[in-house]
Structures are given as C-alpha cells and as structure tokens.
Length: 103
Image (tube, rainbow, N blue to C red; front, side, top):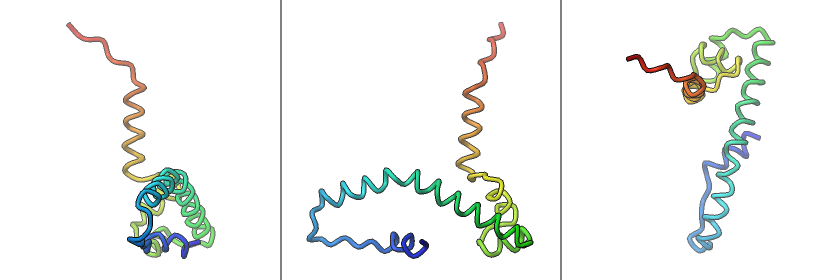
C-alpha cells in the first residue's frame, strides 16, 4: 500500500500525451482525494492504536511517526489536526443563536 502511495510523488507526464486527457484524469483523481484522505487517517489511527496495544509509550509512537507525543495521542483519539479543529469551531459558532442587540 505505501509503495503505491509513494508512487504519487513520482508522477511523470509525457509531453506527447494529450493535455486535455491528463487534465481530466487528474481532476477525477483529485475529486477522490477527500475520501482517500479520510481512509488514510483511519488507517493511521488504527496503526497508532495497535502500537498502544503493544504497550508503546506516546513518546515512542510520536518518535516513530515524526510527531510530538501529544499529536500521537490526538491521532489515536481521532482528532484531525488544526484544520479539523478550526472547522469544528466554525460549526459551533454557526449553530449558536445570535444574541439580541442591546440598546
């Protein structure tokens, strides 16, 4: 699986290929990215939880992943990072009723 993902970083486009088809194909791939991104986060979370089941410390997990121990814990808890937190805050604000204007 990881080899297939790594191949994305090595996409080479032949200048002889039809540019319209390339643009269309890449657009279709990008449309699938949100779903694939969610799947990758889920798989990463499962891997982190497996490491915890193996009695690995949060610090050790963070070291393996190249993130802080706190971020490793957040991943295990299903937090999606700053973008996700900001989106949650925006949703909370949007759901609040506007306060009556004080006169």
